[in-house]
Amino acid sequence: MLAKTVGYNQLALAFRLQRAVCVRERTVSEPSEEAQQTILVVDDEPEVRALVREILTLNGYNVIDTGDPIEARRIAEAQPINLLLTDVVMPIMSGLDLAKRVEATSPSTKVILMSGYSTAAVKGSGRPLITKPFRTNDLVNTVKQVLDSKSAFRRPGPPSEPKPGFGPR
Image (cartoon, rainbow, N blue to C red):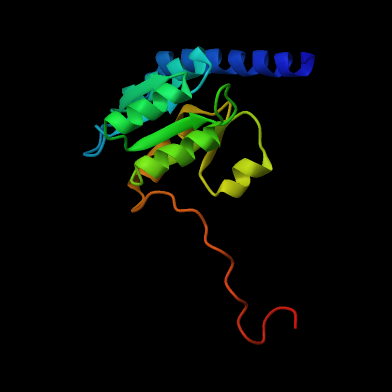
């Protein structure tokens, strides 16, 4: 338990420092034509939510945030959301479960996962992952890249059959 607490404290400190840099530098990109896209940020840590909201708002995005995955589902069902940016490890419901449920009701909503932990389940999901703590530019670039992609995330299909002459016989 102590290791988890120490890890959290280091993460919280990194986010406070990142917020100070973001506010001091005010390095804001010019809003693009798509900048008024709506991003739903879900993280159970208020400091993380506040930092992400601030960074994305400064970059011209419309941001809705919550620490409650159940509320996030209601929001996604009630209005169009272009991107779900969710923490993976949360009480009540994991970010992976939330992503699956939002995708089921809103297939055009794109998803980015955030985590301070790297797990096989997250890597195996095929969804974009941004590792905490992250730099402002990494967050903004990942969001822009995912929003600019032509389609929402699609789960990988089953592996294809090997072509004749390739693979084990």
